[in-house]
Image (tube, rainbow, N blue to C red; front, side, top):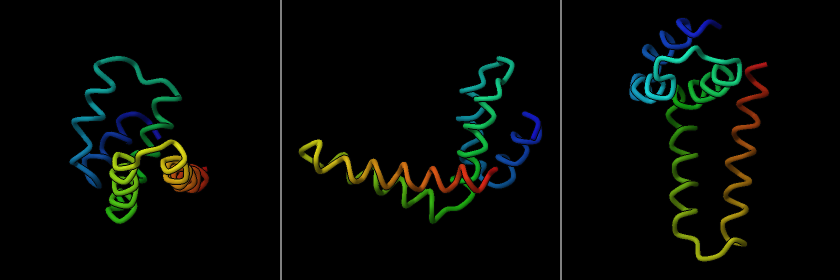
Length: 89
């Protein structure tokens, strides 16, 4: 997927993330890592239920009082993102 293809997909499927994409790119030539990250972000943000699930987990992390309470929530976010990455291969 070219950077232009990715930008078009974000604009089509999750336009609320387009400003983030453009700001992160900031006129630079995108690297392979940048494209991989934003393919993952597109895959998440184009699925409102997944996007909301991750946002909800981050909100719950904000309410935790200890590392022990927060770690399972971070692990769940990591698991979800890993599944997304695997689906992109």
